[in-house]
Length: 363
Image 1 (cartoon, rainbow, N blue to C red):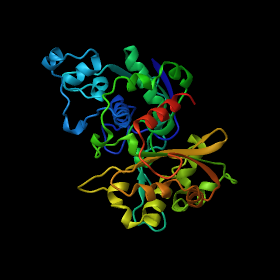
Image 2: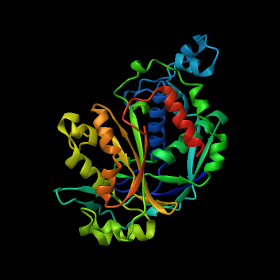
Image 3: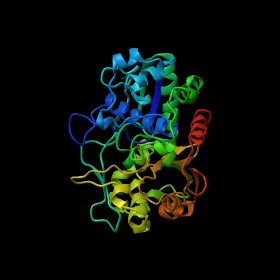
């Protein structure tokens, strides 16, 4: 299965040098694919281990002793969670291979000097490194069931997620050039029918689970072509951002949004801001909010993202993130906001997750 892709925002997969991505690394792509599959499988009520603890190991004796009639359950009896059955674990080979072909991506600016966007009320701001943009083909080889699951996964990631690392800084939005072909072979039923459903109350709450996510997509049509130049923090770096807009049609709005939400709107009683928005230092904590840069689509500008509403007061936090008037005010435009859930926050059921995922295939 060859999947043609086009970047909408810079792609980051790491490299030999710190702070520089030299090419598209398959391992960087695999990491994000596995992360999102874990989120989705947990949301469906399935099992997905904590990869950092390396708890999944294939036990051939357990496999042979299993009395299960279906292969997925025999593999669970052998010590593999639903995700490791596809992505591999100690003693068990990954069920597919990926390879980057026809890589036409390149860094969006020369050199390693980061772009520092610093809103007026910040002393440090956000530092953005030159990721890769362009087109490439991802060749995926595997059995039919695995390819169907991965096709469904990529369709979801295109719509709501990201590919590669640094999603919290807006990297990794992409478009599938062969969406119709993937939709014909994709099926969340392939995943739903193989996961080991469990009581939602028993799902490990400290691990990302789609039942506790919110998704948003903001679209707008600015009245003036240079709308982005007047945003807070952009004035001092207009000369560096202009080539990104003109050559790559992407605008790094993430610092503007994150600054407003975290430092101007956040209420202390909602929870620990550092643990929700991310922290650097000795204890590095990944942000629970992912927002893409803005990119053009169907005659409008668009950006999308998600929030894992973990260890915070989810209702007011989601009300802030899903407030279209606040989006309009932050960006100085008039736009429209699509969110899931569409109303006040409440956890999703596994059935709601399945319906949501099926909808990502048939757009």
